[in-house]
Amino acid sequence: MAYLELKNVSKTFTNVVAVKDFTLDIEKGSLVSFLGPSGCGKTTTLRMIAGFEQPDSGTIILDGVDITPIPPNQRDIGMVFQAYALFPNMTVRQNVAFGLQMKKTPKDELEKRVKDVLEMVRLQETAKRFPHELSGGQQQRVALARALAVRPRVLLLDEPLSALDAEVRVALRGEIRRIQSELAITTIYVTHDQEEALSISDRVVVMDKGLIQQVGTPIEIYRSPQTRFVATFIGTANQFFGKVAGKKLIVSDGLKILVAKMNSFKEGEEVVVLVRPESIHVTTEQQKREGWNSISGVVETVTFHGAVTRLGVNVNNRRIVADIVAAKTEPISLNQKVWLMFPIDVCQVMAKEG
Amino acid sequence: MEKNNIVAPLSKSKNKRKPALWQIILIFIFLFYMLVPILSTYIFSVATRWDRTILPEGLTLNSYARAFKASYFNSSLRNSMILSLSTVFVSLCLIIPTVYWVHIRFPAAKSFLEVLMILPFGIPTVVLALALVQAYNVTPIGRTPFLLIGAVFIYSMPFMYRPVANALRAIDAHTLTEAGQSLGATTFQILMKVIIPNIFPGIISGSLLVFATVFAEFTLTKLIIGARFKTFPLLLVEYTRINGNVAAAFSVISFTIAWLVSLLILWVSRKGQGASAEALRAR
Image 1 (tube, rainbow over the protein chains, first blue to last red):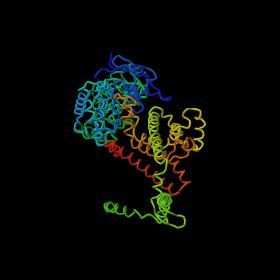
Image 2: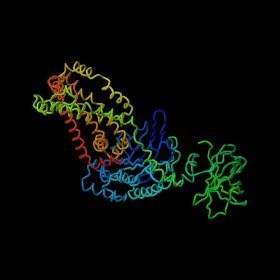
Image 3: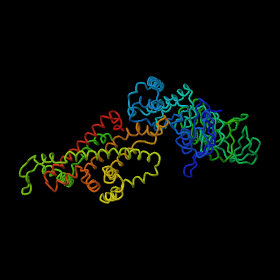
Image 4: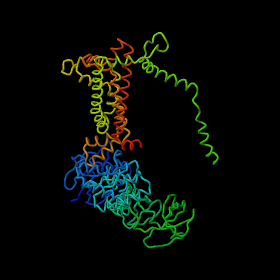
């Protein structure tokens, strides 16, 4: 039995379906991300787990107990907010001690725990300062320490890094993962940033329009997206719309694309083939390779991204993007004719709709 | 380009033109309008005779001596203090939790509350007083100071509501409340330890306004309770019929007391707030 279970949880706000039939098991000690565009229901789901919203139907079970009717202050679930939500009238130490005081923790124990969590987030020296005297990143670390001090059963993080600079964001997400693993605390992390979700999670729940699109490890989500939404929301994917024309053949606008697995699609069905830009090899001369697709086009854009260079290639008046590692590839210039090569097993076939 | 950058601050300071003549005149008219009544009250309270000359014929502190010696001086002052402080207390206890509760749980009721808070301005005080007297005469609190406190509470409600509501709007009360809840605090604990300290400046200005308003309240007191609970304004009005100079002295004393109490409340609140006031100012 999983530690935290959500069973058929639904929530509607004045005719807008926020979350629909959400069912998920979360293992103890794991970090699960809810990932999706804004309005996909990820924050609403998190707020129902925290107890700030009541589901219209369904149950939330924590450690075998139905917590749906329990008020938020009795759930033992910690929360970190996007806007930090530190108490402005209290020092860092007082903020961190607040939850422990509410639990009537003995003084010695309280002092020790405050000291420990502040050490954990590396902010011992700021204990006497007020929130407004700290940087955004520091404030969010205090918020994390405050949530952890009471040793909650589950830690919820609601877009905790969205308000921070890129550099702080990357550093802090590493910190969050380190602390989470150290304490082995069951954590749910809500974000709209795919890179963030992929880099720190044990499992990722991709959501759209109130529905779970896919649940899986970051690698599964990236490599084997199950829906077109997941494939296009996570990373970039070239889409070839076409019809099944053979056992392993799809014809798209005159292009013949071979795929390794047709899944259950039958001849004549409309499908879409997805190919990630980094799976495409770019050559200046046509090469024949067994098990590879090869299509030709003209380079229209060349964008330098540092580690990779992204090419925009016109193939039959359609833009295909391919990432090349500049150091490993011969120089390619604008308006050059190139061949795009990609193995048949990187081609993902999925239904046109959905 | 560079030249422009250097010139810019200079031209900016040059742009700070002196106010036009009409602006200065307007300001003077305004100050004159505001200050003349106060100044003349002050002068009148120390004047001997002031009806035949532009300036008083002589100066004396006799009016003050008479004011301090007036029967009911101490009791009316005490009654006014009791009335004002009780009303501030009732206001604090009722308005703050209500405004917070509506803000957090019933945002839909906010517009209703707004309308409710304008009502005291719309109802003539005489009507309010007579209606209350009619309604409560049969009950034990009819014509008692308790009914009066209730009445002046209604009358002064907007003065507490407005600053408290504004202060609450300025902080993210929702998220702070949720943060408190996730840490195991009850709504009451959150109100006392988190919300009130963060809206303290609003609470203080509300208290000052209520205190000052109630301290100078005449109509409700006169009509609801009359001579049985004589307050300072009642005594003052009585003296306008006996001796204008003494009445002026009363006005000055009343004004000074209100002013001193305001200072006291400010001083106490600053002391109580300490560093957190600093934190709030910084935002």
